[in-house]
Image 1 (cartoon, rainbow, N blue to C red):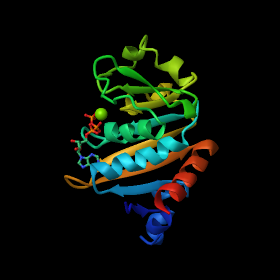
Image 2 (image 1 turned 90 degrees about the horizontal axis):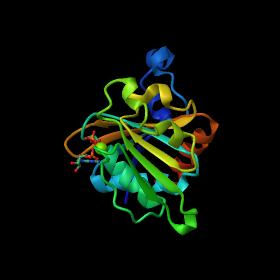
Image 3 (image 1 turned 120 degrees about the vertical axis):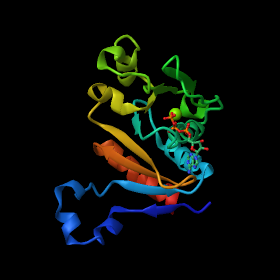
Image 4 (image 1 turned 90 degrees about the vertical axis):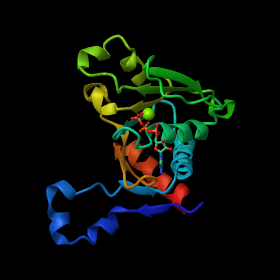
Length: 189
Ligand SMILES: Nc1ncnc2c1ncn2[C@@H]1O[C@H](COP(=O)(O)OP(=O)(O)OP(=O)(O)O)[C@@H](O)[C@H]1O
Ligand SMILES: [Mg+2]
């Protein structure tokens, strides 16, 4: 499958004005990807899942229906899990397990859509999971900003059209910068 990619260098062609503007100064590690279908979103998620390790945190943001859960379906596949991925709307956090080849890593899938105030985060166990032994995938991560570790992979999804989505991978910290650099090579070369 051919995946289209837009890298920060391409954004530099927007001209001096934009690259000097503080709001458009971006890490060279950021990766913008245009998904043309559900299958592509799952595929890029799968490539990312293949690279994730114990302790990794992926914080997903984006409006309703932008594809967060589908990207997570791919990530979970990439971790070798055969578990069914569903939005954990009522329980807030689902747990899956990676394949034996991936040491049976626990995979935590949180959906914080229903969290309206920080106090509601108390007691759901998210902090423990973020410090824990698995991979954490968090939908509506902006609803738990204060709990997120400084180092993490932010993924922002947005609508481009009915079937197209922009997926932005924005790493925070060295580990995640390397992860995105590797993703660029493995998913798009
Ligand atoms: N390129 C695409 N990538 C992902 N989903 C797409 C794409 N094009 C269309 N879709 C559709 O968009 C919807 C995405 O649903 P999904 O549950 O993954 O979104 P979400 O961001 O998790 O939403 P929510 O905020 O409600 O949890 C699905 O209906 C899917 O078929
Ligand atoms: Mg969802």
